[in-house]
Length: 117
Length: 112
Image (cartoon, rainbow over all chains, first blue to last red; front, side, top):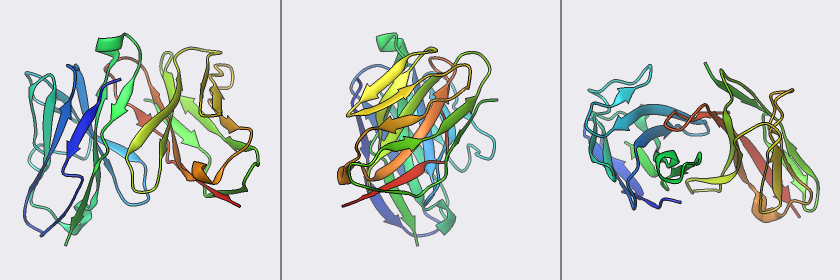
């Protein structure tokens, strides 16, 4: 299965600032996803990152707050903008390997633990 | 839309006890079903999966069978260990390239 490198693994940020999270995959994948896991909660999909087009955002998430880049088939970034303490969460990227292995496989990065103070 | 419902935790068991974590789903079409595990302080790891009815996914002593008639994918293990203590997430997806829909997660605590 694909290997995902996600960084930073954790960060403590001041409110009002922005943080960009990177997700690098060791193989080309069609679909990349960004999730948020708030403390003690399940995972919520933020957006689907499509190569060559704008990301598709889920209800409750907007591009101004969570801009996403997808410059190629192995890399994506998520920026958390103008942060507030409510943004403190684990952010995870995920890839769908179905296009590679013809099997349903979703692999996750190890996550970025963000604390906003 | 898709949804996944799993039993609330925490579930506390003694070592070597039998484990069942219930999961049911609603979906249009025929989803693939997954169990993910999240150990303390770590990201999600795929534990097992099943892509069609009656398939059984298995890994590390855990099993789950895709039951179309009851729309269920219950996770079982015959003898849990302390090292199995983690949060377990049931999830569904209706096709390659579609998003995963997660349940709320069930925390498992295994004690000596």
